[in-house]
Image (cartoon, rainbow, N blue to C red):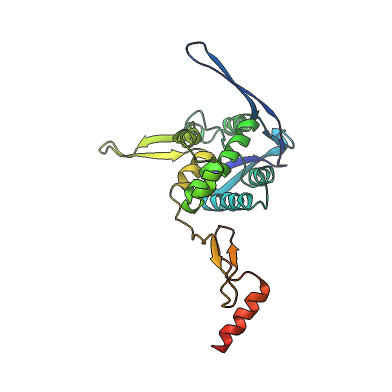
Length: 251
């Protein structure tokens, strides 16, 4: 599936900071949650004329890139800051603002399209972009593969219905297919909603056994593997791998 998107040509940095979330109930009770992550994804440059760039994305490529970052974070090979900057620089806005009007009415109006493009670009929200990239990395994408269930539990990152729904908020359109039918189509209008919906359809990747015994017959050491995709280890060391190879040749 292909998706149109936009980005700042010069890329992004992260402004790391913390603050408080304040919620006021209908009854007038105010609740404060201190020390919340208020980091933001900040454009290196923010001039529309020089920085506006259009992209055509393959959703499968985006998913695979985010998933690889999830595994790298889990295995302590990278961190959230590096991952979010890399993803944003490559794939652009998560929550690009949708068109306010039907484009078909103004399909030949260059001034209208220029106004629409600038409106989307100017509505970039760095704090929300950071928040949702982190939500994708911590919960939404890991939840697409059952072999990461323990990883989610260990980090208290099991996603909720609210997490998934927040990723769809202002990011889908619903339309009937025909006057004669009751079925309808749900269409994502930004990268965040598209990636969230796409992740729910992903096939399970091969799970490696977490702990195995070295396959060299004279060694009984346990091997703790990195759980992820690809071929897992079968021996505890290079020396055992060579001994195993010689053992097999004698058979």
